[in-house]
Amino acid sequence: MSRQRSIDKILASEFVSIGELVRLTGCRYSTLKFYTEEGMLPFKQEEENLTRRFPREEALVKIQEIQGLKKQGLSISEIKERLVEK
Amino acid sequence: MRELSFALSFSVMALNAQDSLRLTNAKKVSLRCMAAAAILELYMDNGFTKEGEFLTFRREELQSAVIPMYLESVVKILLGKNEIISATLPDYLSMVTKLSKRMLVEVEQGFAVFLKEANALEEIPALLGCDLEYVSAGISMKEYRSHSDLYTRITESLRAEILEEGIMTDEAILMLWLLRESGCFYDLFSKVELKRVAERMYELLDSSFLAKQVYPIQIHKSIETAIKNFLKIKKEVMSTPTGSGINFIFPLIERSQSVFIDTEEYFANKADRLSDVKARLESKGHTFAVIREGEVPLIKIDNVLYEAVPSAKQYRIPVHGVRLRKYPLSL
Picture 1 (cartoon, rainbow over the protein chains, first blue to last red):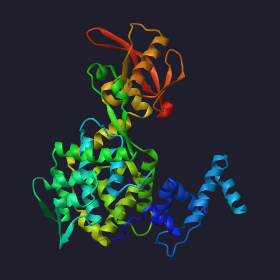
Picture 2 (picture 1 turned 45 degrees about the vertical axis):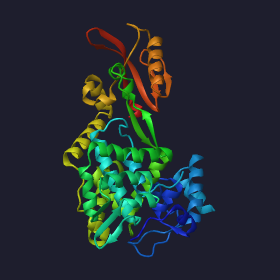
Picture 3 (picture 1 turned 90 degrees about the vertical axis):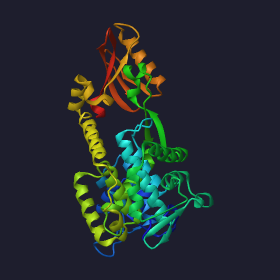
Picture 4 (picture 1 turned 120 degrees about the vertical axis):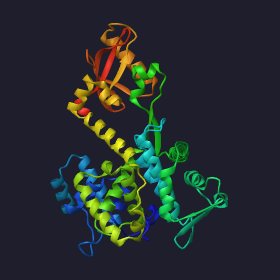
């Protein structure tokens, strides 16, 4: 049996799944998937058909950063440029 | 906000937008599945004593163990007058199809009280309760509304787990089955995504012991599900710009989208009409704001825009008032 992890356990772990990132941030799955596919969120994937694992702290900071830049009215390409500059 | 258990998470999805005062067909479907969710939660948390394939529950465990109210209400119904109950998981799940209306109401009470205390669910007045015919008949209309942020977190994390590659948790596997049986699939997944969901369910039937046990079981009643889906499609069609126009001419097609509010006077002027509408809506607990005044004012009720079109209804004597028509921008 593989049970869902509690929020406490997720917060204590180094890597999280995209579903767990959704639970932590309240962002939509499609939004996070888009960020991932655009290369804005770092992740590790051991094989093609295995779960993508996101470094929790780094991913949360990136998501906050992206949302902040979005609120400033920047487009996705501009946000990507900003993230690369850093 | 605290984390919700498996059965409560499902209930947040199943009870959202359901009539809170009456046992509608759609709510019956949801309540049966909520009872099944409670059984599955007890099963996953080792609440049953396992003897081979058989799962046993004794009444005395209700006093000794810390069992939340929503689980207790379901277990008490399953126990009935017996002191002990023993069955396989599929048999337990099949029992929910035989729950009477009274039992379903008990299940609802158990869950709704708990969810309201957790601030995960609230009861809001339904706009139809402001309609002349409902007001004069003294019929109150209320519906459940789930906490929007919580609803998003639950549904989106589930979508992520199902649509992404990788191993699925037991909660997601069972939630898929509950969504299938409750007919909530279409609320969460697009047509394209549903193909992927179907593929995943077939994969799980081969690879997961839990899926093998649970997926072949059907607890939905085909007639109830058909009625639920028909009413949902009708409401969706009548919410489109064309549909809302048709519904304005033939209000009986979708009564919930056709609200007539009477004015106190015959041939009331635009200011009196608006103040009567405001008084009625506020007396029923709706938030109200005027966006544009005029002969046909644009008003915002509970964050949805409506036009208040002057109209009359023909009874023994004609009644003057306004009909609310959803404004295309909010469709």
